[in-house]
Length: 369
Image (cartoon, rainbow, N blue to C red; front, side, top):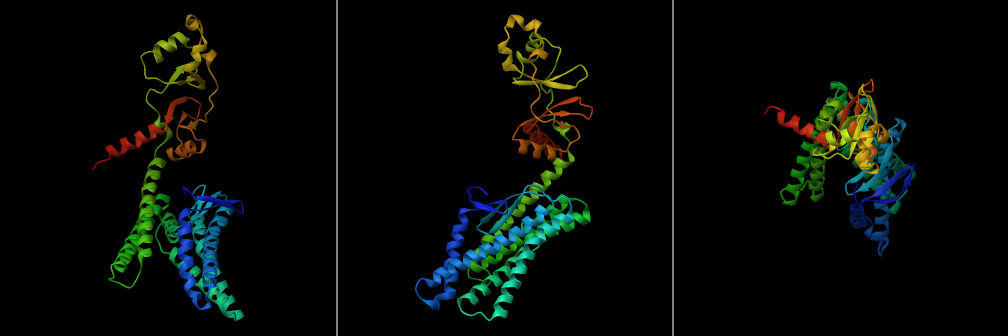
């Protein structure tokens, strides 16, 4: 998350805390200190602080549950972040099957339920009393609440991801699962906002300002998930060749520099680099306009493009590759354009991030009202 502070690694996973976490740490310390008020002095604050840290440790264990299952499936975990409303494990990619998505989603609540059972068993079985017993009771209660809350069937909660995996399994379409679970998350968000608002206005004793804030958080994130799923579905249905730039900057290897300048540079749209092909359309390399300055203009008629051509540095993509895969590649390689080739190596043209956006806009405008 933006602005988060890295505090180390956990099992090789970068661990961050968001600045909002410190606010909850302070509020949690003050609130839980009230459980220990009979002890006097600053001891209640110390115990409240320890209890709050242990609560966040439970949230962290919850996220590690997701992370370990994801890693067993070969999915890299980019980071774990603690923030205002809990924690977030950021995965490098989505699960490839609904079954994998289900097990990743259920792992977090399962860990929380196990911790609830563990702390309850320790508290009941050992006969511990006093502050330690109070802390165990708090930890057991919070882990039970954490598990049950996250099992609510709506994104971005774990229950929403479980619902997504079930819809995905039934329909065979992962994006339909996301949209359905996102809509459910929006409904949950509106309900939480209504409950919180009634509480703030003094109309109801159920809920609090936190209920309202959590509802708003769910509503916003569920909406973004639905929008993202719709865009991804469109990108999956489109191919790389669909977004190739018309009149892409492509020249023949046999052109002289004079012909190249007259036909493609002077008075034309300014491209800084052109792809170079042979007579069969096979991609051979690229030529940078800047490199022509190294050749005297008097020699341009006798110098071919081949002599200034350089190997293509960027990766090429197949013409039938989905645009979603292409965008992921552009982001991963931190580049803005890619040559598109057919299976036989014939160049189709050049694709850019901008041409993908224009294609999506054209499809949206062409869609009947």
